[in-house]
Length: 145
Image (cartoon, rainbow, N blue to C red):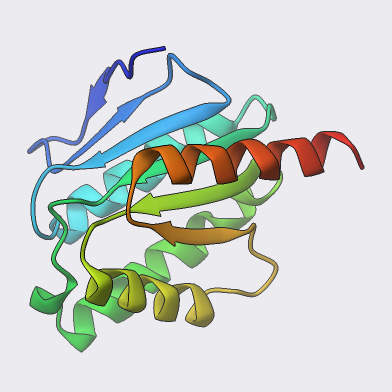
């Protein structure tokens, strides 16, 4: 099925598609979203999962560049995550992030380490097919418990 993007933050830095649910397609449309848009996105994520149905987050971060993020912004991003974690926890089965840049994958792995308390499985991938296959396996593990 084709990804259909239906929602965007106010300046279109982050876009979402829900047509393939349980997969939620998330696309970062630039190097680094501003904090207000990051917050907007998390508020929308929480709205999506408010029905309690399981979701798999497939995040296209091909254009994301974490090298432009200073320590203050990284801390603010973590705080946004922690504010929404409880709302996201029950429905989030797994999160796959796709970027071709190894350094970005390493930085995202470090972010997961910082925010790991009772978090759903997260993994970084170089390609979409590999990420979707991993999400499918994660979903299968959850439904066979």
